[in-house]
Structures are given as C-alpha cells and as structure tokens.
Image (tube, rainbow, N blue to C red; front, side):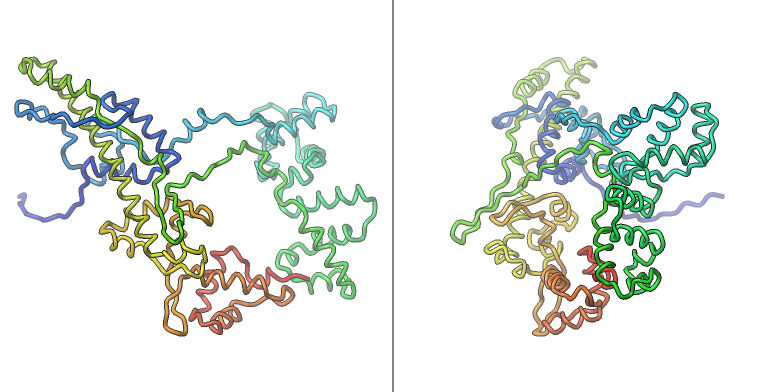
Length: 485
C-alpha cells in the first residue's frame, strides 16, 4: 500500500535576468564586442545608439501572453542549457572560432612542411618515402616521436599496405633525425640531447668538452638530471678536472630540449586589453572603465511602436497573439540585455573602487611591499555582494596603472604574521623568498629549512611547509636542483 508523506527541500533558483548578468560579468573586455554583436544579430529589438525614453510595454489584455521566460529558472537547468523560452543567452567567453575568422594569421610553414621539404633531398623511392612520411606524421609539435615503432609498423601495414620491420624503420628514423632542427624525431630527452651533441661533434671533428658531454648523457643521464655531480666525476674518472665537467654541463644546458619549438603550430599574438584605467594625478587616483565596457545600446523604437499597434488591434486572432508574444519576448530580451550591461558596469566599478581603497598605498607607489593581505571575502563584504561575484571579476579582469597592467587577482593574497604582530601580504613574503634564493651561493643552495630560518630572522613567522609551497608557486626547484658547479 502506498504511503503519502510530506518533505521540505531547499533549492536555489536564478532568474533569467540573473543568468544574463552572470554570463556577461565573466566575459573579458576583449570579447565583449563580439558578444554584443551576436546579441544584435539574434535580437532585432536591440539596436546600437543612445537609449531613448522608455515606451510602456504593459497591457492588461495581454497578461496571458507573458512568455515563460519570466519564471524562475533552476540552477541546474542554467548550467546545462544555453537557451530559455526561445531566447539565446550566451556569454561564456568561448568565441575562438569567430576570432579565427576575424583575425588573419600570417602564412608560415609548419614543422611537418619543413621536414617534408628536407625529405625531398634524400632521393627515396615511393615505398621509402611513404615510410618516412608516416614517421614524420608521428612527430608531435615539440619534436618528439612518442608512438612506439611497433605501432607504426602496424599502421603502415593496415593503412598503407606496406610490410616493414623494426630494423628498416630504425634506419629511416636515423635519416630523419639528421634533419633540422637538430634533435628532431627523438624518442626521449636523452636521445634528443645525444643527437644534438653528436651533430656538434661532427661539425667540430674533435672537442673534449662535447665528448665529455656525450659521455655524461650516455652513461650518467640519471645522475645528471638529479645534479649528482660527485657521482658523475667518479663514474667518468674526471674527479680532478672540475673545470671540464663545468664546461660540459654548460654545453648540455645550452641544448634545445624541445626541438619542435612553436613551429609545430600557428601561434596567434594575444593582446591584453585592460578593463580599467587608473591614473595617479598628484596623489589622487582617477579610475575609469574601458570604453568597450560601456557600449551605447537601446530598445528598438520601431518594435515598441509595433507592439503598441498590436495592443490596439483585434485580440482574438490566434496568429496575431503569437506575433505579439514574439515581439514582447524580443523587447523584454533587449531590455534585459541592456540592464545586464549596465549592472556589469556598476559591479566592475564598485569592485575596482573597493580594491583601490584596500590597496591605496600600492597604487600610489607600485611597491609590492605595500600590498595588504586581502581576500575575496574582504571585497565582497565591502560592496555587499556575493564572493562568487567578486571572484568572477577578479579572475577575468585587469587594470592599467602607471606601473603596468595587473590582473585583479594579483592584488589578492593571504596574510602572514610578522614578529611584531602585524599582518603582511604573502606576496611580500614570496618576494623576499625569491631575493634570498637569487642571492644564495649556487654551489651550496639554501634548503627549505635554512630559508625558513632566514625568513624568521627577517621577522616573518612562517613554517617550512609554507616555504616549500611558496617556492613551488614561484616555480623554483628544490635546493639540490639549484646547485651549480
């Protein structure tokens, strides 16, 4: 027998207007123009130009024609659907395809084109050329072949109907490895470095430094990657010639670990467009919003007049009701979009003004040590907005100052207590940590324990694990890997 029961559930819902605002807020300034152009194309009730006085769109007789888009929308529906009541609401910032069409890229040959051009000088027959092309096609953009040769043998058999074996494939690979750039078509880093060193040695005929470098990579590769130089000298029997080891290591470090470089694909120059411009006028900070963030948009007067005309006509016509519903939906959508743009401008300005207030000393001088500890919650409380809203602004926006362009997330950092009981920004601690590592004796680099003691001596109360975390965030390796001869 079925039982009836009552239960309470709590769910969060977003209105279409809120969704519109959220999506527009996270769109970078560089892509806002594209987003607006898309909206102008899909909504004929939206036009460019200064907004005209609003035309009343209310009609008691057409309440039954209110589009369902005015209802609340569940958060889950929003996350999984970009269309609601026939109105397209985009703005996730993914407009790569259109950018490619609008921005022509200068012609340049790809890595494969360069290798195939060099292949033509070998004078291979048709079968050999097919094998060589298969190998070249297996080279990744950084210049390595990571696909197993056994798999390439199978590829040739199934796709090209060519029977071959590992020996023939190895011979053809050796020929391709003689192509430029040096180190191309290597199967791993060790082979890549050896190819480049052997090319250097063949050019010089004889060189003790290059010969030693080859011995280091060939016999002591693991020790070299871990910088165990004492083990290398002992294994190669060159304990008494430290200068030779130093020159050989220097020669190795000058090699190219990624011979494919960026030639494997077309690279498009990216321009950073600031969302805010901050100017210091004799101590007074003047903030302006990039003009791209303040487009002039308005609701179409012709569509408003059209709706008013329909309002006075026969309301019993079914087709007419559908037309009125469509027109009203487009008018509402245009008004929502304009309101969302204005709300975006207001949110951006309020957030940036609060950041300036918090980091006033930094914006006066541009000194990193003047940055105060600041987290998203601080700004959210200041402007009475949700942390997620501040996060969307901080993660995708930047400001142009007298000291350069900074992403807003640059100004957010944790607080660290000093010996005097004051809180300083973690960015200041990272700056001091970086200075300590730059000034260290590279023959005896400072361990994390010693770095911790040095920071505490300067008044920063910080644990060793925090030192390790900051060092990793600065992309600085451990002491052993910073050691130099």
